[in-house]
Structure formats: structure tokens, C-alpha cells
Amino acid sequence: MSRSQIVAEHLPLLRRYARALTGNQASGDAYVGAMLEALLQDGSLLDQTHGPRAGLFRLFTQIWNSVSVNNNENADVATLSLPPERRLSNITPLPRQAFLLLSLEGFSEEEVGYILGTDIAETRKLTDAAGREMAAEIATDVLIIEDETFIAMDLESLVKNLGHNVIGVARTHSDAVALAKNKKPGLILADIQLADGSSGLDAVNELLRTFEVPVVFITAYPERFLTGERPEPAFLISKPFQPAMVSAVASQALFFQRNSRNRTPRAASA
Image 1 (tube, rainbow, N blue to C red):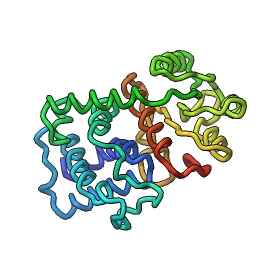
Image 2 (cartoon, rainbow, N blue to C red; image 1 turned 45 degrees about the vertical axis):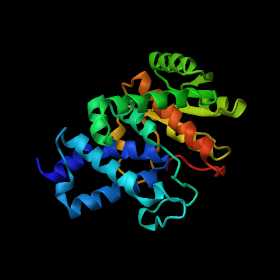
Image 3 (cartoon, rainbow, N blue to C red; image 1 turned 30 degrees about the horizontal axis):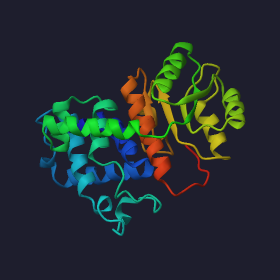
Image 4 (cartoon, helix red, strand yellow; image 1 turned 90 degrees about the vertical axis):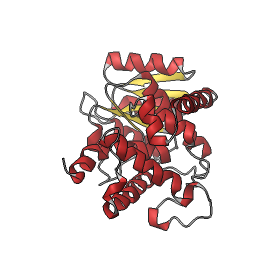
């Protein structure tokens, strides 16, 4: 398989990881772009010791941890096209990187250590630290937008076990809007395509015109929303999902919401 084929195969999920790290589509895609430019200039940068996917994530991590924006608030980040309100000097340190690699991307501890440049013992310490950090997150009210009964029940149980309160489960666009307007949620978990033909994405965009809330989207077809060709969700979980995956991404979404000074309404996606 050629290098371009390797990149094309794994690029969508690398975009997902990058967006989860930065909390923003444009920022995440900019870091991926920087990695691709580096790889284009020097193909030997791609180490496939643990396979091509792990090699790409390792190279991305080296770019992520070396770019000055992560170490200096006053750094010039024009080449990465990062939103000025997002200063990443204290965002997504190693513990959260390790937890996201394990829980969101499904890498083994050995692969995570390879990607981050840590040994197994240090990798476990990092994930334990992330777990403690996430456990300290303030509980919030959660709205679930999901039309499949059993998935909705799983999500409701999972969210409650994480210490949050579920204000309701909406199965249509109109139900979601009505619920959210009556009880403004602190977090939304939303299926993108609902069975009645309505869209969880459209419902969220309507809600975000009136108030700001972190949103995690759930879909069986994540690659359709990870192209970078249009405004797309920053936090995306693929079906079938694991509890740790929901926990990691929901916590990351709340983390960015609480550390952001930007409180103006915004759109989740076009």
C-alpha cells in the first residue's frame, strides 16, 4: 500500500482525535494539515513499527507537542489558522491524550506508549490521572437525542453512572427543541440521523442559536463527518460505542466549555 493510501485510510479517525484534542474542527484539521505537510516533505517520518495507523498518530503527536502554541500563549500560530480565542497552552495535557487514545481510538497500552513516547507504567499513570481529573468534573444536566430505544437506555444509564442528571430523551427534532428550551442542558448527546427523517444535527444547530452548550454527536458513519470539507462536529462518537469512549469525549467537551472564555452562540455544523 502506498503512503498516500495509508494516509487516506486512517485520516478520518485522525481528524476525529485531533478535533477532540483541540475542541474545534478548524484547529484539529489545522494540526492534521501540519502533520501532512511534514510527511510530504519527509516520508521517513512515518514509523510503522506498530503499524501505519499508530505511526500516523505518533507523528501527529510529535507535531502536536512540538508546535509552539502548546507551550507559549504569545506564539505566532497563523500557519495553523487557529481561532484566537483558543489558547492551547494548558489544554489536553498528556493524561487526556493517553485516555483519548485508549478510550476513543481503541489503541492498546503498548501502542499508546509508542505514540506518546512513554513506557507501560507511565502510560497507566497518565490514564489514571485522566480518570481522576474527569471524576472531578462538575456534574451537569444532559439531554439525549436518540430515537433507538435500547441505545437511548444505554446512554441514559451511562450518563447517570458518570454522575450527571438526564433531563430527558428526545426522539425527534421537535422533541429535542422543546425539551432543551424548557430545561437548558449543560451537555447534549445527539444522534445525527433520526428514524423519522429529522436530524439531531439540525436540532442542535437550532438550539445553539439561543444558548451555548457542549455537544457530542453519535453516528454509525463517522467518516461522513470527518472530511474537513465543510463545517462538521468537533466531538464525534461512532456506533457501536463503549462506555469509556462516551465518558472520554463527554468529559473533553465539558472541559473545553468550562475553560473557554468565549460564550457567544455558535453553530455546531452547517
